[in-house]
Amino acid sequence: MDFIPISEPNIWDKELQYVTDAVKSWRVSSLWYYVEKFEKDFAKYCNVEYGITVSNGTVALHLALVALWIWKWDEVIIPNLTFAATANAVLYTWATPVLIDCQRDTYNIDVTKIEKEITPHTKVIIPVHLYWHPCNMDEIMNIAKKHNLYVLEDCAEAHWAEYKWKKVGGFGIISCFSFYGNKTITTWEWWMCLTDDAVLNKKMRELRDHGMTKERKYRHDVVGFNYRITNLQAALWCAQLEKMEEFIDIKRKNADLYTKLLSSIDWIIPPVEKSYTKNTYWMYTIYVDEKKFGLSRDELIAKLKEKWIDSRQVFYPLSDMPPYKAFWKAEELSISIDLAYNALNLPSSTKLKEEQIRYICDTIKSFKK
Image (cartoon, rainbow, N blue to C red; front, side, top):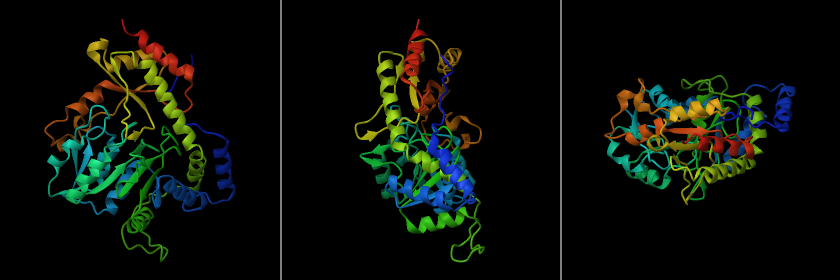
């Protein structure tokens, strides 16, 4: 059996065709045909009015927060279990991230613990649809409305996931999607901001382009950023987007097979799918019960590697890392910490074959004495 990577991009002939077309057009920099096409097409797929492409995930969140006038003394509620970019973007605005514990079954922010952390300085809630399951958006939106807060959705890992038959990314005032190399569709790094708000759309576009107004070229009314992408990356996006639904079907089919094959193992807790959600399983994430297994999560990762199977730990909890420890205000973060040190991601590529999944599951079963 060849080495099975945790993820790999699924590239086909259309990518080469579109990128070649972009190169031959000589319009390889930002703000050309494929950039505009992808912004419109992806927004339409998500049932949102406007799409604004940006150069990476951290700047997508940063751009959104700046557009919402988040600044010093403001507080932004985020989950403790997320990639550091969520917290970093808040810190770039000089605001304060407030860490909230997670739900054990979905790995997402625990909505029952949000309100007790709200203060007069709270301005934004950032729910992160982590790995495979949408957050409880009804409760989050109700809390936000009650306290007059913005909701900024971090959808980096949740392409096409649905909450109550509505795609994620359409709940918050702004949402951010990732197309990094290991995501379901990819352009290697770039991101997208979505919004239904025409004023925010205009503001983010200007801020993305050095603060330059659309009415008068090379006039800058505000200090902006160079967060633009290129027509080449957008061409790759457009081709990938055409396969999006097929890729999601593959992800869900693979997850179903994983769950079927691992369900008999009492020391593994597989991912859940609530009846009111549609998961798209960016990563197939399992929890390892060390007491029942007899080995730690990290020992399992090492044993899998010996069998040519890649896997990876979930994100470290923000509360355990030096740049973010000072923002641990919540009374309890035990669940997110437990998940962080006992869960792992199994290979989840759309190029994964059935025999590879069966080999992975059989190998895991063989480890139990």
